[in-house]
Amino acid sequence: MQPLTNAVMAAAASAPNFSSSAVVQMPSPTGQTSAPAPFSDLFTDAVGQVNQLEDQARVAVDGLMTGAGVDVHQAMIATQKASMAFELALAVRNKAVQAYQQVIGMQF
Image 1: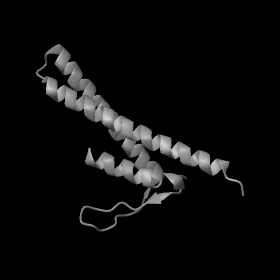
Image 2 (image 1 turned 120 degrees about the vertical axis):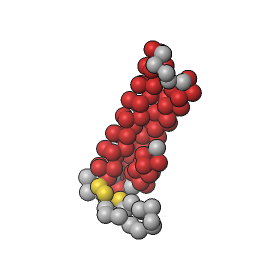
Image 3 (image 1 turned 90 degrees about the vertical axis):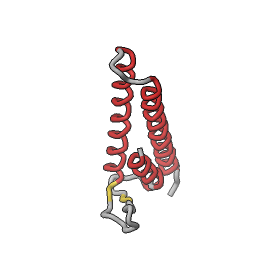
Image 4 (image 1 turned 30 degrees about the horizontal axis):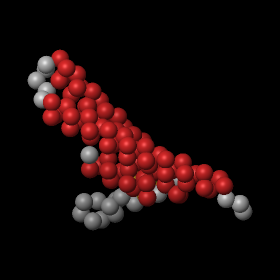
């Protein structure tokens, strides 16, 4: 979940500068700055990771319901991870929409 959090937080930090050419510098674990990553790629990766967590939760719940050896706590943890990731992605989307609306509302 850490890569998802990093990607979404980086996307949220650059949301006011939302455009197809917006670029975010992602720090590496060693503290060095990696190559620039376009905002659209970060957001696409974050949405893909949310989808992957939802798929894992679905598989865990299906395994629990069919008695395939999935424990209740494993299914609950998977569903909570998926829920939290979705809520975070939704919050980032709402912030991006809010920033877009503010830019559109500006008078030059």
